[in-house]
Image 1 (tube, rainbow, N blue to C red):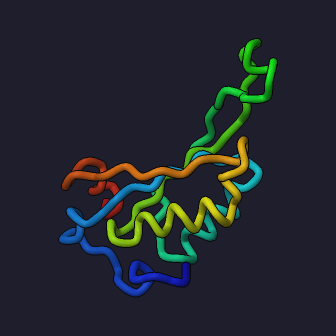
Image 2 (spheres, helix red, strand yellow; image 1 turned 45 degrees about the vertical axis):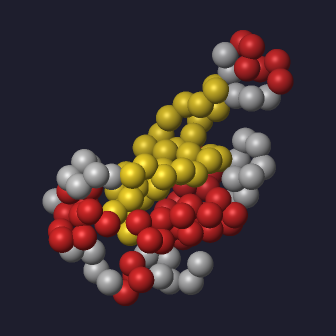
Image 3 (cartoon, rainbow, N blue to C red; image 1 turned 180 degrees about the vertical axis):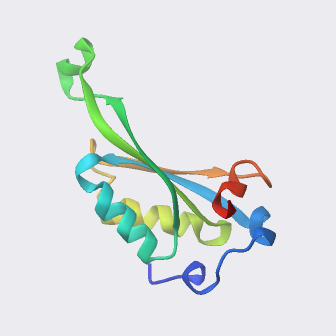
Length: 118
């Protein structure tokens, strides 16, 4: 994805009904690269927080082994949201088990979207 309309058009409060939130769960080792990439293509990083995920590595999951992850929330326009998630997922190889996940949360008006303007 090249720099998209989001990079050209500064988001305004009037765009609030046209926004989506993309959520990326990634390894802590790629957090800085992921957030830099998202900013470069025009996304607005709302939050990046550390968390723990369950391990899917065979017998380790039976014993409750945890993996440290980062959860990155990104604000973007609805019309480019799917492309953003696809591009980030491809670049960071989220199709490989254990590398991460990306998905969209639809916002409805002020549900959390106002945070981008405060």
